Length: 222
Ligand code: SAH
Image 1 (tube, protein in one colour):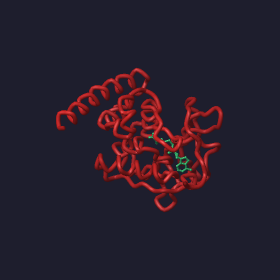
Image 2 (spheres, rainbow, N blue to C red):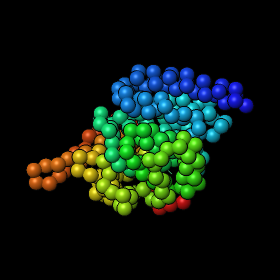
Image 3 (cartoon, rainbow, N blue to C red):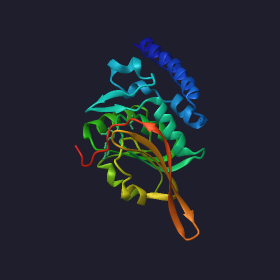
Image 4 (cartoon, rainbow, N blue to C red):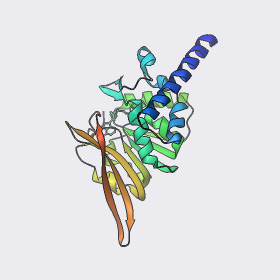
């Protein structure tokens, strides 16, 4: 039993190192993001039948028609959100299996993550409990409304594609805060939205980043 467990551990450590090397080749530069991803066993977030593929640069099914994001996109979104600085309170919309949530928990003070499909949230809770992460709060809710009771957030990360940027999320972004969000239906583009202080208040600045492919952000809960 223990040698089997150790065997899996060794493999995942080596494959994780390969994953980090590939992320560097793909242009990920933020060492804090890379070391967070190097310290989290990605295979525990996917079904056992798929665990041998967990470190490939692909998205994989997690049930209920949803997917775990490919390592590159998790790294890229985390790197953009961090912008080289430690994060305070972060809100994630779309917990899925909880992998991105786990990565965020290593680079932020508190992570709030909202998922609309209850059984997926239960799965994520199980995975995150296994990793004993204490700075994560999960909630079953429609993330298009944000999480007003915990706002404002220094970072907001949306891991499903929105048709437009929800007004509620803009309102819950702290001044100085950053949001990464994929926008679009057929063609999706990843955007960075910064809430910056100005002499007479604050404004939102939008930067187009790169084409992406996410499952859609849907309203309501399941
Ligand atoms: N963050 C995940 C990605 C999961 S896929 C990862 O690390 O791989 C996107 C998730 O967003 C799905 O689980 C989907 O159910 C969820 N989702 C879609 N619309 C939502 C909404 N309005 N509120 C909360 N979650 C939503």
